[in-house]
Image 1 (cartoon, rainbow, N blue to C red):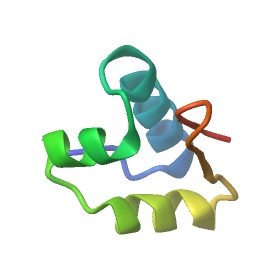
Image 2: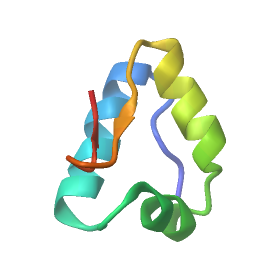
Image 3: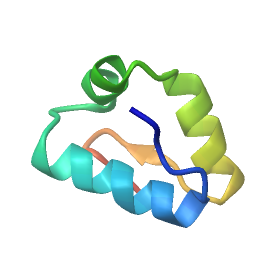
Image 4: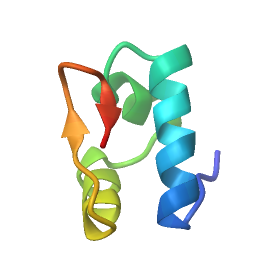
Length: 58
């Protein structure tokens, strides 16, 4: 599956998946066969970080 490249669309996509389908970021990345580090780096470049307590990017 291809994920969005625009950081704001990616943010919405990832947070929706985390909210609706996955208990944590590792499960999402495993299911989509994507690198957690790259995903976090891409979203960090736009100013977002993953919050494990809320299971979402802010």
